[in-house]
Image (cartoon, rainbow, N blue to C red; front, side, top):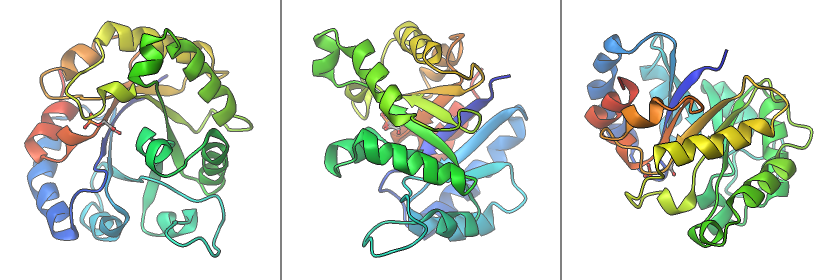
Length: 241
Ligand SMILES: O=C(CO)COP(=O)(O)O
C-alpha cells in the first residue's frame, strides 16, 4: 500500500515564535483529516526543537531540510542525523532543487545524504525534477531517469519517499498540469524496484489545485512550499477532498 504523504517545506521562513503561532492555528484543523494521511512539517533547523515539544502527542511529524552524511565532524554549516533524531525528526528532504542550484548539491552528495539518513532511521524525501530549459528541449524523462539512477545507488527503497518537483513550477504559480505530473510520476515509479514507494508532486501546490492533483492515480501526496506557511491554507491542502 502506498501511503498518502502531505509535507510542508518551509524553506528559510519562520522564527520559533512564528512556528508556534502557526501550530496554534493549524492543529485544530487536523480533527477533520483522515487518519491515513501522513502530515509532515519541515521547518528551519532552529524551529525543530520547540516544534517537537509543541507537537508531542499530535499526529504531525517533523522533517528537516537537509542532513550531512557524516555522524559529526568539521563541516561548518551542516547538520548530522543524530542531531535531528534527538529532537524528534523522522523525515528529511534531500536533493531539493534549491540545494542543487545554489549550494552545489550533486547526485553524488545526494546519494551520500540518502544513505546516511536511512542509516540513522530517518525517512528521506528525495526531490527530482527538470528545469524549463530541459523540459522545452524534450529532456525531462532522460534527466529524471539519470537523477534517479545516480541518487538511488545502494539506497533502501523500503524507507523512501520521492517528490517530483519540476523546477519551473516551484514558487512561480505555474503549476504542472495534474495529468502531466501524473504521467511523469508514473515514469518515476516504473524505474523503481519497490512499487510501494510514495511519490509526491511539488511545485505551486495551492488550496485551489490540490483536489485535482490528489485525484490523479499515480500521485501519492504533495510537497508544498509557499502555501504551507499559512495555517488555513496548509490545512485546506491537508484536508483535500
Ligand atoms: O519547492 C517546493 C517544495 O519543496 C515548492 O514550492 P512552492 O509550493 O512554493 O512552489
